[in-house]
Image (cartoon, rainbow, N blue to C red):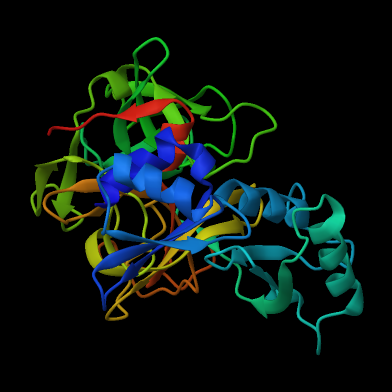
Length: 382
């Protein structure tokens, strides 16, 4: 059902889908969309989703939410008041927006200057008309990035390291650029921080295939935390995911069956090269804009919460696969970051030292649809 909905959203952008929510009491999906009910019903009928979804009206679609968030955060999230935006969270229908400021700059109250600046930015280009904006303080988000020991593989969920630097991420998905049929690997943009042509390799060992990182979007477009790697490393990659603990010996490789939409209330698994596989992460919110310190602000981020409170991901897991296990392994997204990180970790041990490995039960990821809409198709085994 969610796979068919993803296909419908990609082929019919005029539906104006804002968010999707799982309704456990009925077993249906509530789809918030700007399209009128008749247009929506016709598209769902064509997608053979009659009776499986419910139409909910939306004020803004997903693109409108991202544009409004970009108006608020600007280029780096810094406000004239001295505050820094760490997160913009729209409601499912886009009628409300919650703006979170970095609590490390916290005063007794949020300044009138910060409130008025955010309100003015939200209304400046018209996207915020009729949208209620609230402002509060909260913890800054952290990207899931760190170095790692060698564990070579040509599958999703393995270690990759930047050539000539002490940093690493996790391999993402084997994909194909639709124009030119070029093999690529889709992973996290913040891993290379937007430096075009940066060289990466499997593991920390010389001699393994290398690929170069490139932004997936053209200049001036709203950006998600996704990029593509081109070269031998991507050429040799296979459509399978390491699932198990953070070691090769403790993991098996499972084939990817397809891709699905991110639905509020559904559960997903993370498979990072440092933390290993952690499932039962409930999707709490979609369409967030998140600003990492020293990095760009990213649109269309999904937030999850681990059901039992154990760490779901941490530094080093960036770029790895997020997937659903409904009737097989289905790609859902790419690991981006976390909130409220501590030194308690699964897999590789955490560290309370400054710059040491941190982990969290609250995860952030970029939907796989971000790459699909940018012109890249997922390789899978049906």
